Image (cartoon, rainbow, N blue to C red; front, side, top):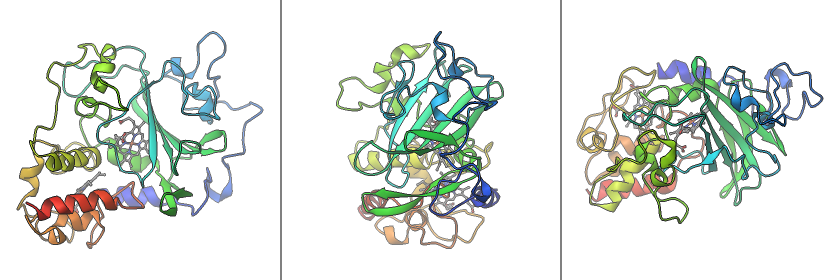
Length: 345
Ligand code: HEC
Ligand code: HEC
């Protein structure tokens, strides 16, 4: 299944440009500035009603029409309804920096491990490369609409961002280590990661919010307690390993692998369990079970270089690299750290 999804997800790739459509049509700076766009709804028409209040409306063409960023020249500043949050274990995306916001029409039901998000909930994640947050590259959006979660991604050019056509697009960006072709994912890639676990929301959950962000004193769960029907849980989910390096490794797997590697079977890419209570048992001295060409042991204590988990993260194996989507530049720093951890086992 993964192979079909990946092939389909790549067919819209255009090198070096943020073209919003095939054949060079629909450039991100073109379009509907003078109105006449059937999807368009003012972000705020003066009485506080806009796209955010209408979960039945389609995604507009322009990000400004969502009504989340009142000043598109400064996307670090959001409408007061959009609450910013930071997960403990972010997804690696080519070394980009990200800002995340959530708009909730009412409280999140946190009685069960998989939280219930009210209709009209909107999540946004904006990606930046380089040393500061001056030039955004893309903003990914998920909304709980009439038919469940739906996706859109907006490609920035200057002070506006246009919705892409749902296929993947490559855009050249300047990272700390020089330029790179960053892929703005297509809809199939969004689904490959977001639809393979019971909760399609991956970063706004108990474990991910149980940490102190940005030099504060409260955890994100405590700070945002009013957003949840049950308030802040008394004993929130946490990685309990005593050893700090083991905690860091398990956290990294939570942020980068557990979307698919969660031990469930219902999603298109659901597979064996790397969540923090299961990962050590799933990895250490366990044979790789892939239907592809991978043979070997996932983690060989003391021998990172021959451990399938490292080989697949480095793309040094005759099979899909891991993760199979979303990475054009691998995370050398963390892979080295995980290697050191394996070598010390
Ligand atoms: C490689 C897997 C992967 C792909 C591909 C991917 N995402 Fe995500 N996404 C994640 C993970 C993991 C998180 C949570 C961690 C974080 O925020 O860094 C996340 C977070 C988000 C969030 C914040 C809400 C949440 O679930 O935590 C939004 C919105 C989002 N993604 C939208 C998209 C859209 C739209 C696409 C496709 C254009 C997409 N994502 C593609 C893995 C992925
Ligand atoms: C988008 C979903 C997805 C993500 C994210 C993902 N994987 Fe995988 N992974 C898969 C699928 C599906 C397979 C099985 C492929 C097959 O059977 O050929 C797999 C196979 C593997 C394998 C080899 C097979 C085996 O039995 O051991 C390893 C190792 C692996 N993944 C590690 C990781 C690691 C580590 C991460 C995070 C850094 C990760 N994966 C992220 C979907 C994913």
